[in-house]
Amino acid sequence: MILIVFFYLTGALLVLITSMLWTRWQKTTDESGNYSRIQHLKILKARHETASDLLELVQIDGAGAWPPRTNFESWPSALRPYHDIYFNIIPLLSTAEPPLDDAVNKKLVGDFRSHMRKLLAEKINLTLVKEIMTAAEARKWDIFPRDAYNGFYCCIAVSRHAYRWGTIPVVNFAQREQVLELPPELDLPWGYLQRNFGITAASGNNTANVLLNYNKRGERVYKINIAMPKLIRSSEETFFRIFLDIEVSAFPIYYEMVCAIISYEDNNRVICLNYLESISFRLRCLLRKFFDNLIESRVSHSVWLSYVQGFQAWGVGSVVNGELIKYDGLSGNQALIFRALDAFLGMDRYLPDEQSKRYIPVNQRKICHSLRKHSFRKIAQGHGYIEIEHGFINIVNHMRVFRSAHRARAFSYLGQPAPERLVMTAGKSVLEGATKQETENNLKALDQMLATRFEQTT
Image (tube, rainbow, N blue to C red):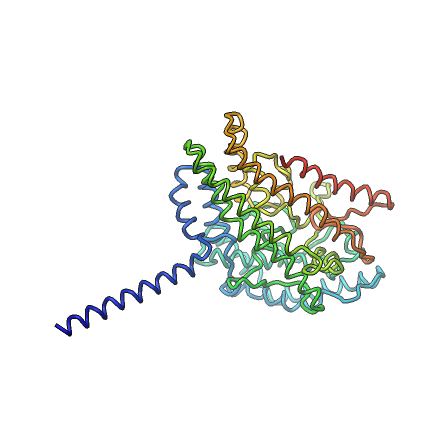
């Protein structure tokens, strides 16, 4: 009898321990709740295209998660030299005291590009690269897993930007370039990568250069100013971390926007209102990441313009059918969360079709299209559903506060002196005109664009 009781208690203890370990494992793997949200989307996808489009974004572009999963270790061996080459050349990119002489800068840029071309030609087997990229284009993900593909996309994007500028801070000589021929080792895979993501630009974008630039441990992989003083390095890290942290906080909002739409269409306004209130709360917390980090003590005014922003610009193009097609670089308006919220609120798009196709991955465009198509704010207003409208107004108010603050902070950073370069934003390229008045007019036009978007957010 004692032996039976002993075995019974031992078995019960093992069950208890196993249960505790399982609960702890579940908590670790689903800390954010995204796993359960994704599982729910799998159920909802047959019911509604917003759920289907969000799930497609997660499963395809995100390699099963959002923000997207990346892998920088498990690449096909023929692609590994790209990673090593970036780490070889990047210590040579930044300079503590940028020269103001065009001839000196021309040599700096030329030497950097020459060294990079030499390494690429020596280390990269284009025949093998083409075979791998062709296999990936045929969806043979066993050869090139999707998370590894994401990491490679980032590597090629930032390598192209490093080659584009040749020195950091960005200098006047490089800004005045109109056309740039990139090495075939950077062009060949880029065509495959851009087709996969449904983008046409020669430049990188917020997804490739920023979101995909973090490994599974949350560490930023391809840094810019690795040999520069701590103030520059910390400002760089903090600035780009803002975009990742915002997107981490954004996924529950995307999910709840889908659920709010489905609840409203099911005529369940109480549940719909709960989702709207949750979106408003989450959005306020998300925007705190911007307000708390884009400040002088975290991202220094004195270094941001010269050492952080410039690398992400582009401003060159190629001649197609006798016409020069120029591309811009990264911009905050490429961030998915703000475009998704505008769509959910029923606002017109900020970026026209051509710009969207150049810089925004097709699956991100699809989810925004679905959210806008199924936006129910105006319909609810027409029915006089006051509580629903108040739920939307709370979201709008958060967006108005953000856009007002963003406008002020953007110009506090853009207004810093940078004698080595022309006035430029990463997203709009060179703004400096032939005269001081023309430059001021260009900056006023940019400010007016931000002011207009603020006014449209109602």
